Image 1 (cartoon, rainbow, N blue to C red):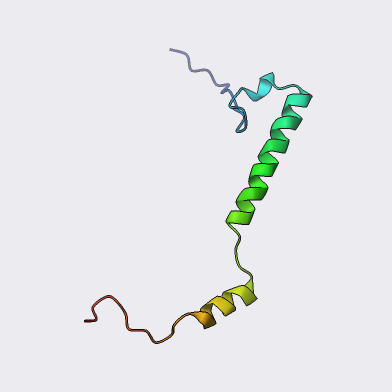
Image 2 (image 1 turned 60 degrees about the horizontal axis):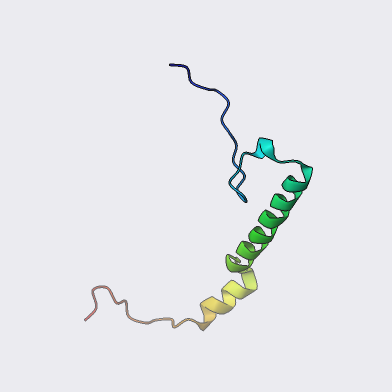
Length: 70
C-alpha cells in the first residue's frame, strides 16, 4: 500500500483544488475570502481599553453571587 505524499490543497472559498486555479480564479477566491474575513473581524471585535473600562464601570458591583446564596 503506497501513501501519496502530495495532498490536494482545497480552496476555502470554492472547495476545489488550488492547483486547478488560474490567476483570475485565485484572485476571485482571495477577494471573496478577504470580504468574509472583514465581516468576521467586525463581529469578533475586541474592545479597546477605554471600552473595557466603560463596560466594567457600568456593571453592577457588589451584587450577591448567584451560586451558594439564598
